[in-house]
Length: 309
Image (cartoon, rainbow, N blue to C red; front, side, top):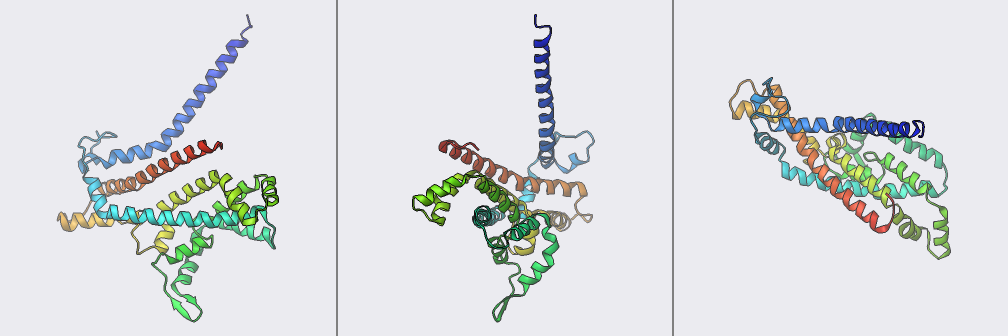
């Protein structure tokens, strides 16, 4: 009766839905397939790695790879130190970047555009380009007439994070600044009329409304610090961190096979890759669990306050 109009509309709707499902399924598979492959390899014995009949499902299931990776990384002690460093750095970075981002969004001061351009440069320029300068600066760190060697201690990294020069700090400043710029100025004006000062308005009015962006930046900072190897290797060499310990698994496994198992040839390349993949998986899984817990708590808190995330 409609001359095919309803059929065409329904067919188009189903075609779009099926196409969307295929694209999302393919995207999810591309993201999850490497993790699923690491899980499969981590459960294989060495003979399964060279068996052409074994592809994804191991024939001989073993937990020895996890035991070796845990032993080589000193896993539980390293996990605790990594959590402490990542948490303190994330809290410090977000606290400082929130003040700076709010200042760029709401206040006028000399050379404002120039300083914000420096923030953009901090995002664009890779940190490896200034690694030599950072190393020399903190290796011969001078305070008045005294010179200190801060290399290998966490102090330089905390100083950089407090000065908004830590890992991805430029990105956090930009995101927070854009969020505050989109908030209506009438909120602040009403607070000023009610007698609040600048700092009181920021703490009592602006920060509660900025919960979504602050939690997002905190999660970014925590996750990136958890997996960082550049700044951690440059400044935190004396502290055991998972991102650094994973890179040492290959040499430790080779020495273990040579001198403990008395195999002159050492560990095979496939077996080394297997244990390294297991260690990488042991680094990823805790951060995924923490992320899901934090994200769930964040969603519940947003729902209670009535704010749409």
